Image: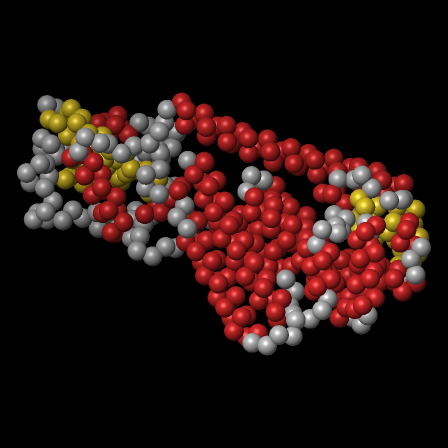
Length: 407
């Protein structure tokens, strides 16, 4: 089940990423900041799978319960019994995935902590200097960058001090925009989401796009503040060729990279093509549709065929115990359906007629009112011997917090 849920979360990530790409195109056409699109995308990739049980889905009320139990009745009449894999291979896979998940998150977290410690040690070695009226740190072979958490500081490499005065001013101004926008903190928050699901490739892609969007927005603020576009582009090209992280891990420094330099240069020239409104409307519509699709994607943990929780008593022995206590009469070849809470408390029973006196033509069974997402598991037992009669047993286990309403 963990494997199915991880695949579900990965699919949600793909849909959210496609929605973010569409929204980015619309905002770019409007000349709006795009970084918040990529800041929101990782949060949605985490929240949608974790809160999918609470997302309302239409058409899942009483008819869903009827569909679940009718399918179970059909299985009782055939030679097949729907079930779930509780054997060692499945259990081993589940444990392996959970252990691997934990180790991967732990390892990346340790790398981040190590990187932060190395960066903190290097900061003590860098000298302080006032450049363009701003106190900065000067580092050999590192930067330009903004480092820190509580106190954000600009770090410039020694080569930046040798630039022409106007070019050096643009570099400092660029970094000051990062400080004003608290960009390093935004990156750290986004990386914490990646750390929660490091196996999800969509989150890594979104994190990379967030870094790029932060740089694009920062460039737009610098140019919007009156900087010469041509000169600023020259500075970007020069800095992109000289920018280094000084051997520090990228996760610690968040130093700017030159991989998206071409996109940044192109973004400096505004797109003045006509027919912008239809393209923006289409892109936003696509983004909204993909986001809704991600929210409504079926969650395997909410499906009625999910396995019973390990802490619940065995469904067969539990059901026979309930029959013995209640002394209910079940006809030969008949079926009794039990509804129990997540803690194993009996909530209701329903008798289904035996063969030859089936549901068609008879009075409908008054099933309890439940949403499909409130069902944790449905277990079917065929051919159970009880007091000399051959009966079928259906045990419907509800999720914790499920609302049980008697008809």
